[in-house]
Image 1 (cartoon, helix red, strand yellow):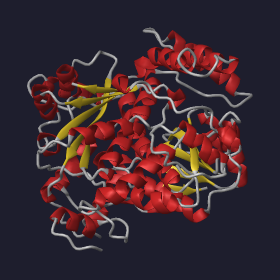
Image 2 (cartoon, one colour):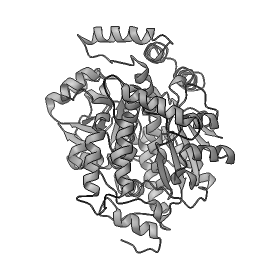
Image 3 (spheres, chains in turn cyan, orange):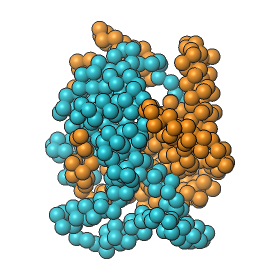
Image 4 (cartoon, one colour):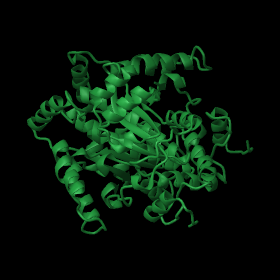
Length: 268
Length: 268
């Protein structure tokens, strides 16, 4: 680990997730980091035919662990990444992906699952990790955030009473001061969970690319059959399936194409 | 550009988005790419106090262009990234983020906006780019996909008739063969759009990190006030706000904390 006088570097190093100590910022950071990141980013293309060989186990494990470094709302990580290795389950998932080549020929399949329902379980796990087993006292701020604010925002019920309560109160208070406006319906809760799982999904694809493997995000699948194959609990929702492996040239369906920058990036 | 006998490399190089020709796979790919990617990934922490200096304009532009390299469903890119530079709008957005320090002290603010409604406009732009201005003929497969399948899946109406039609037909056909199960309600359409915008959001945060800048994904905001400040059209929905800049040490709120691997990564 290099020494530096930047306190943020020291702090980040101190708290760094991995043991490499390779953290930033320092003068050489961008020089070493940007080219590698750009390579991983630009090399990622959706590849739809693979050679079928599995990704080495250690690589998959590393990529999956990278994926969970994505940030999440209140750090609640309301998702699960199903690495489907059992041959029968795997075949069932590939078929559930409408039998498309990206799934049928993949070396590995990961089902990205949103678990918005786990907010409460995860909240307790986080609090335990931070306080009982961690170094932090349960400060008033932490207590207030995770024991009052988070439950107030995330709790739901079958009749939608809590959603309605929130809608009325937030809209009323929002008239005179800035105020969050949701979640106030079932869709809001779903969007919240899928947003967090998607951050992990993109991290997984970029990590696979950085490791020299191709991937394909699959949105066309039979969620009922995937649920059955993986025995997913009722509140779990599939965000996408990610296939991974060594791509074959015919799996690249065309030039990279994006809408013009100005259509997507609005400088206002 | 290095020569290589791997046809996928050549093809990827040929279609590479940037002009660097730095694509993969080749023997040295992982060696140069993985460390840089890992640095960018592990250095990304949610930083909640910034020094207020803007990120250099060229860096922000580069990061935003990186963000739109994220994949999207059918490549429809149903999102917009609002880089808020106008001082008045910016102040309004920061206040709409409940005045939280991550927004108030940020060097730059980007509002990630889901635009599920743009599927039709973007579909035409894509088809034009691929056929009229591109090199591809409008093959039957392409025609079928973008002119029949995509509209059949994405079209909605105020009364939900198309959603209901899809629900019935997909469930019926799904009894005997693998079949997509949505979108069949308003929430499904919203989840779809926010999933795509979230892939871009995470790419933006990782790119900022790779460039040596900190960021914070902000989920606590007043969507009504942001809509007003940016004059967003009715169907636009804010996915999150991302603040960016140089973080201050006090902006790092604690050690990196994640749920145990086994809670998030399910080997099945």
